[in-house]
Amino acid sequence: MTQVNQHQMPIRHVIDNAEKAIQVAKDAEMAVRHAQLQSDPHKLSSALAQLESAHQALAKAQSQMSAQDHEHHGQELVQVQDQLDQAQQSLDVVASNTEQPKQVR
View 1: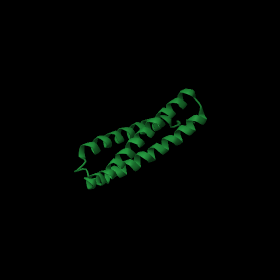
View 2: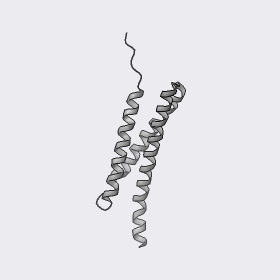
View 3: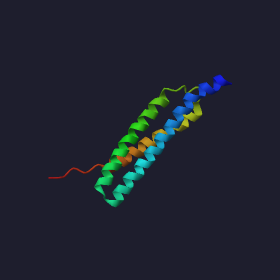
């Protein structure tokens, strides 16, 4: 039984990291939305930095997920991977909505 618990620790750690990255992404999205609503350039700048950190956290989590044995932990990993993918897509949308339009001359 000890071997099973030791074997499961890395996968639990990877899933926990992925869930934390998803939460960081949600928090970053919310920060960007609040800054946009308040039209505060300083808050927006800070929120965009938070958004970049969230991108990095998601990328790291996805890398860790892809290194796992999907055969033995398939369903749970697939669900978390789907959540990571959705969070990444959502961040991409938020990031594209914050890009400043180029000035037309």
